[in-house]
Length: 197
Length: 245
Ligand SMILES: Cc1cc2nc3c(=O)[nH]c(=O)nc-3n(C[C@H](O)[C@H](O)[C@H](O)COP(=O)(O)OP(=O)(O)OC[C@H]3O[C@@H](n4cnc5c(N)ncnc54)[C@H](O)[C@@H]3O)c2cc1C
Image (cartoon, each protein chain N blue to C red):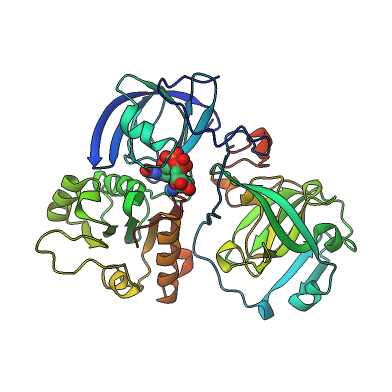
């Protein structure tokens, strides 16, 4: 236990088992990103996966919308300590997107419109653990929150859920992305408080 | 290293405005901070309950001392304790300084436009102080949006700098209450007022925007629409849905 601050009692926002250590619950949906939100019309949007063999699997908005769509109820946890419980998203499972992808790589770099990158081990993306989503709580995803589409990897801190996502590059090693090169943890599990490197 | 909690001793506490206080901390082994970084502070109650919040560093030194300025949210969990209760000699747990993105380095050569809403001035003040202390001759301009004159942080220092520093221009906008004799009537910040009070888009200055989420979102959007390259804009959001727009 840390140093006791006498006279500090706290509001006990936590104590809720759904909250990872050091997180507090917020009802609003704060926006956090490194710079202004890019504009990407649906017609210009695409999502790709590139493999080490140089193969590129790509989906236009129409092709992406033709894939099986699922609803994802989940909690999200931001490294700046807020958590939002009971959110609902709609999109395509990463398992669906990887159906025809052959790779022996264990890591990925997610790339976004606007230049943002984040690294995620492949096992953290597959097995029903991540999605490319375009709807939040029944509404099209707002631009400020990553619209038209973002990654959703809810079991990791939310900076891994890259906004304005454009694609994934498979890599043989774990290459730090944007925040990971700026002092944040390479993996980012909120339950283990993997905040900083 | 930055992932570890360490002990900071409170060495000073001075009111900064009606609702805020600047707190000096000494951290053993600290070797300063980059201008614009923040620390996390963890408070623990006597039964083990703890809460963590982030606070920007207001200073930019190279030693074991740093200062933060905390604005009290009436309904808040951590800020009222830091503004009112914590006393000189108390110990706090901190992590950091953290961040390598929303920072200004004395080797940066571009002109810099700083845009602060309310307590968002804190990391920008750290940049102003680092700039003044350095040989860096680049032009700095600060636009500081405030509800009222009383809400302003670092009043005397900014006044003196705006009079005496050849490298810094300071502009204020007031959204609810202006000082007596002020030329403009207080009003919600608009894109026109903003654009009239900052460095032009050409040549592109490095821009740092900090404040509550809504303030930062709106200002960044106006700048992009006015032709400032998105790549030259860095933002830091203090969270919350309020703002001083
Ligand atoms: C990188 C970073 C740097 C920061 N630097 C500073 C600083 O230099 N000075 C400073 O005063 N603050 C700063 N903040 C904000 C600070 O971390 C706290 O959020 C703030 O002090 C409120 O904490 P609290 O525990 O008092 O309020 P809480 O108990 O968290 O919330 C009180 C009320 O405000 C709303 N709220 C929740 N979160 C926030 C929020 N983050 N901001 C505003 N309202 C909120 C809630 O809905 C609630 O009604 C910074 C935040 C970040 C992320």
